[in-house]
Length: 277
Image 1 (cartoon, rainbow, N blue to C red):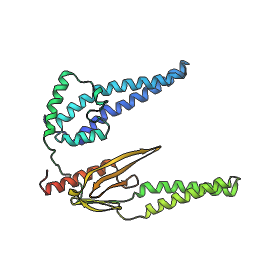
Image 2: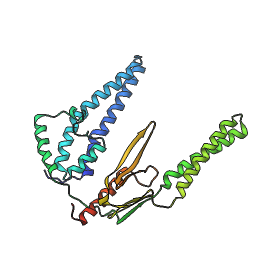
Image 3: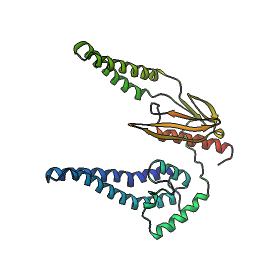
Image 4: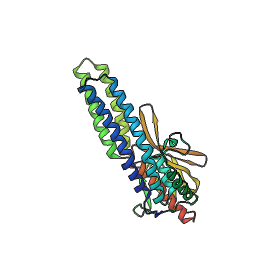
């Protein structure tokens, strides 16, 4: 175990050798079944067979390859706790005890290697600072994300006005104008908001809706993906004394991976200063 691979490198290799091929296999099986249906004049259920075939092939591929990746990654990465946590979030592996984890195909030799690797979890991760991250980071609303929405909404407003003036669909035009104006106002408030929504440093974290808390008073900080109906969003979440934060980050000038990295680095700096690493 040379432990020369970073967590980011291990995850990148996992995506390259597992997630991307799986997506390609699924797409190719659907395309192949569609062409077979069209050119061989097969019945419509051919598409369903294609989906099922793609699912079986990709699951078998994952079952073999995830074991190969798991052994390589955990042998060569020092911070196995971080690697495991992030690999679960990136949907490379499943949580321990999951029924899906039990479908991984492992030989006797694989099991012996994994048992040996498990001993590494008895050792705490070490903190490696990233000096490209400044002393403090402030996260603002993203103008790049708001501006295209405002342009699109302005077009909808113009279309609504056209319906009112030039067609008989005046009620529909009025509803469209009202909706466009409402969302335009919201986006304009976001676009012109110059206050930081998140502030992080090696002392702690503060958001636009919560006070400043030092790292030793925080727990379970992470970025979560939540889906409700047709909508899915990312939220910054953490627990603090007497409450918890849940801040939408989709409209901010950051993303899930960057924000989680910032929190790891700043917490690591705090723990290093207090000799907790």
